[in-house]
Length: 372
Ligand code: GDD
Ligand code: MN
Image (cartoon, rainbow, N blue to C red; front, side, top):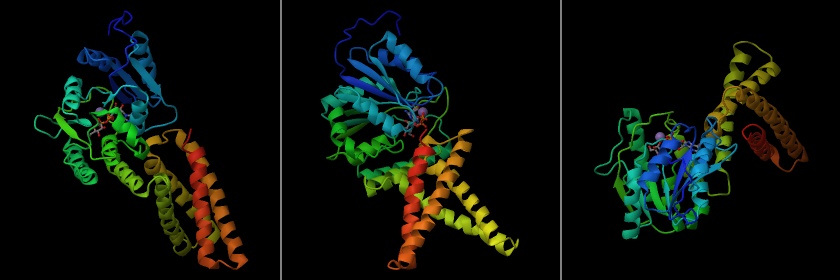
């Protein structure tokens, strides 16, 4: 990137916006911008980096670049994580009629972009996908495990969107802005399958074409996505089915809560029978163990995208136990009250108590435990 201010018609509105979601990519953003400005020569472009407040200072690096080139921009999101939602925010932050999404770690082949743009225009398509699974494409040196996971996810993806898309998991594509704008409220925004999300939310079947590229090796940092594939997938599918009424996190939270009952009993039983402990002591220990395991499971699954780590875990655990302690009291109190009123019977009373407790636990921990 030249050091002088850029003089090439800075007021010209962009024709193509490259949306680059980043998390801890400080070492590669400058190189990516350099390569893009070469590859996109002759096109009115802008690059929007959407960074989730990476601790390595990615956003500050991008700002440095942006000071020298007004076509480079940054959106820095605080207290949030998530590849899909980052892409959506970036795509909504531009006036360009064509949008490309690509990774910030140099694994995608920027030299494909002009061909993508031309194909999109000439063939009057809605979307062009950079594909690893059509002739001429490839995945570089992935581990066997990652390859088979990717194949598995690909098959589910094809089922979901009813389209013969060979690489529905690709994170590299170019789409008309109006296609995204017209379905943006239906996008789930969960996880990292933004392409699938767009395909399955579009108003009409999308006219698409896949262009081959070879997924490059990652040079700096490491992949944040490898272990999350199936779970995030499940969340996205669930959200698609139940729609916007019930947050998918609440479902996950409740399922884990139900699991906690088994943990509770599994701890209580041996204390009472084998160790001969008192009921109250047993209850106290079982409750604490169940809460703790629920905290870790929620941290790992429900809030995977904003997972607490290291020292944050202690604060998280503490607030979780406190919140759920109050939730348990509310549960028992409400159930008892309804039961004594006499109309609801034991089953409905207990159910109402559980529901109120669950909603309370979910709401309070969403504010104090996982929203920092
Ligand atoms: N803003 C934001 N927030 N960016 C993120 C987040 C996040 O929570 N997580 C990851 N990213 C950014 C990374 O910084 C990188 O630029 C890009 O998203 C892809 O993340 P990687 O961690 O490099 O993913 P990958 O290389 O394992 O996965 C790639 O291949 C998959 C196909 O198997 C991506 O292209 C995926 O989109 C793709 O599905
Ligand atoms: Mn990558």
